[in-house]
Structures are given as C-alpha cells and as structure tokens.
Image 1: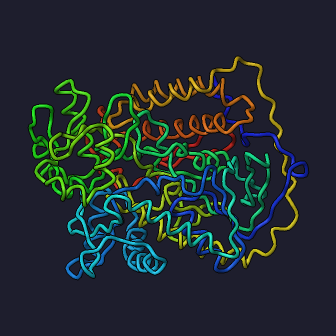
Image 2 (image 1 turned 90 degrees about the vertical axis):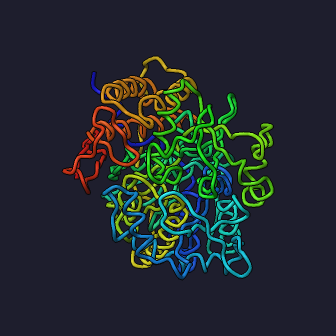
Image 3 (image 1 turned 135 degrees about the vertical axis):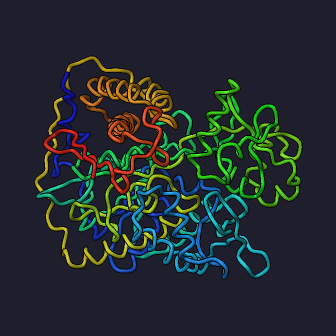
Length: 545
C-alpha cells in the first residue's frame, strides 16, 4: 500500500491573515548552546527573536556533564585534536569543519570566561580531564560534572541582557514557511497566545536532537526531532540520519529513567566490570574503557548477552570516596538517591541513546541548501562528527557554529532587506476518516521498537520490518489533524524514525555508531560517502553521495 502521508507539507491548517503575524530580522529556533550562542551573536547586529518549545533552560545542553574539549595546554596542539576527531569519525568527517571548531574553540572559551562562566581550576590553571578517544587531557569542566548547566546558565544570562533579543518560551515551532524556494518564517503554537506566524529575513534552526525516539535515552523530554521533521517537510536535505550515538554508561535502576554517568568517570580511572567483577574492556579494545563510544557500547551489550544480564557495572571504589565526590558531586548525589555508595558499591550501567550526529546538511558557514535558512548544533550535520562523535566535542561545536550561524544570518539579513508583507501561504488539510490510533500508545511502542531494531546493533530484516510498521502507524496518525503539542511531537517522531530507518537500510556496512549485524565490516567504497534524504515530489528521496 502506498505511503499516502508523504504528501503532507504542513502539520496544521493556517491562513496567514487569520493568525497573529510577528516580524524580525533573524529568528532562532531552540535554546540550547547553539541556539543561544547564535541569538547572542546575531543580536549584536540586528533584531532577533528566539523561540523555544519549553522553558529557556530546558535543553540537552543543561544536562551535559562531561565538559568541553578544547586545546589550552602547551603540550597539546590543534593538530592532535583534529586527528583525534577524524580518527573517531571513521572516514565521514569534513576536515574543514573539524579544523574550524578546533581552531576557533579557544576563543569561544575565553569569551565564555569573560561572560562569567566558572570552569574548574587547579590554582590559576584550567583543570583539564581526559576522555575516550582523546590523546591528551583537554576536557574543561565546571562544578565537577555540571558543565552543561554552567554553559547554559551563562548563555541565558547574556542572552537576557541583549537589547535587540526577544525570547518566547513555551512556543512550539510547527513548520518552516517557504515561498519561492526560500525559507521566510515559521508557524508556531504558544500555550497562552495560540497559533502565530513569525516572519524573518533569516531563520536559524537550532532545535536539538531526537534521542526521545528511544526507550533508553539520556535526552531531555523535549528532544523529539521537531527540527529534523519540519526541515524534511520543507524539502531541506538531511544526511547521516542513521548515525545515532549511544552513550555507553547510563545509570540503570529498574523502573527509573536513565541518567547519564559521564565519560569523564572512566577518564578519571573507573573500570567497567561484569556481574562477576571481571574487567572486560581490555578484551575488546587496547584503549579499554577509553575506547570510542561505539566500541564500549557494543562491548557492554555483548557482555550483557553473554551473561544474560540487564546491566554491567562501573567500579570506582579504588578512586576514593572524597576524591570522587569532589570531582563528580552531581553523580555522587544521583547514586546516593538510589542508595549506591560509590566507595563501597558498583554502579549499574547500560547504554542509551545520546546524540544525533545526522541532521540538516550545512556548509562551513552553517548555511543549508535552502536560501534564508541556517542550522547549527545537534539539528545540523556540519561534518564535524562523521560516523561517531568524539567525546565533549558537542558543546564546542554548539559554541563555534552557533556564533558562525548568528553572524552570517545577521549579515544576510542586512542584505536581504525588510521581511515585507506576509506571503500568501495557505495550509489546507483534509484529515482522513480512517480510524485514529491512540497517540500515546504509538509513542510508547515507537520507543521500544526503535530501541530493539534501530539501536546499537541493526539487521536488515528488522529494519525492513520497522519501516513497514512506521508506515502503518503513519497512515493512521500522519493523516490526522491534531491541536496539541504532544500529538505533533508523535507525528514528528514518526517522520524522523522513518528517515533514520531508511538511512540505516541504505548503508549496507558497519561504520562508527552504525553497526549492521549482516554487514559487520566497513566498506572502503563508502569512505566519505553520506546517506542523504529529502522530500521531493511528495515522496522520500534517498541517495548515497
């Protein structure tokens, strides 16, 4: 049966002249590190509106524990950081993009310090930690294991101080508005003001990731892939959507939501052991616990299967209770909430979905292929991470490419002139009379299916089955007209899950975070080749480029 929901361009009905219209030079969607940094930069030059679907401080950025990878030590070098990133990226990184974040990183950190960010120090020197895949200790952190919170708080404080920046919280971005092949605004729903349209000379999409598609995830509730889905509906190309990174160590307590146990814990000297207390990582990789994340995640999964276990364990007992508490105060408190004494007990852990590497295709200036639209952060595919993100490069990418996107969008807005009169855009949707599925049930079932079939290990038959099930759900969910954010999220999640599954089927090899049981080796012919998806002629178009 044909997938009829492909023809859907907009999620909701709207007529431009029947809803409030607001105008700005630059519109930023998202309030994580990339969106905030972009908004701050653009506000130096023009009027800016930032919209975020929850509260300003509710983002994956605020949850980040590990730190920011940046070259600050005399015995470190840009070339070492670049080579570490390229090595972990398994042949899919864009060297120009990698060089840019590495070389511009120190300036962005100095800027954060000037703005009041309090990174941990030893005396007058910034304290630098070691994490997996890094050849040098270059990870800056704040308050031990609350780096993301410090970064978010600093950027929020600076953003609120910008005279030309207005912030709309609780404002759900529904769809990019396009006219004559150009992005010119976005339709939104605000919980107090209802539907609105924001017109902008330039739009920056920094809406974050989609880890909430999975049952096991480290992501905040808001990470439902809304930006990826709205870009797809608008015809914007996306790439590497099969590349979802799984974090090896999240706290596993039956019945509780997963919580991140930072990579820095292993960098600090903790060991991974099985239920017999055996340290197993040296059997899988010479770097043991500091192997790349995809290697560690698969090793844990393998060991769990061998022992029919629900988790493995982090052993930090030899590090000393006070030393551990001082370095990781948040993780220590988290463990204590579940009566885990890190000086005496093993910490139960298992992998979880963590970071979407794929996203909107952007160039070195954060421009997408659609005029008027920029993208940065987890919503974008900048080429920095390749097939596997190097630990603690994400906050760095957000700072660097956020600034690039903000600066370039402001410059483009100055050239583009006035947003002008609203475009004659009308969305007319005729929902079908087919039976409506329970959206909450679909959401829960999608979580479980994505974890089983599009998770750490994948198989062609299961991916094909997943595509068929998503198509079935889509015919009964995507053809409906909803009026609440939770249902729009499910429609977006189905769209993104479909793109991820199709991309995973297309890449018939194993590379980085994408591991196919039926194609367990990397294919040299696919070195440097990306899977690109887009909506064209009302259908999913997929290509290897």
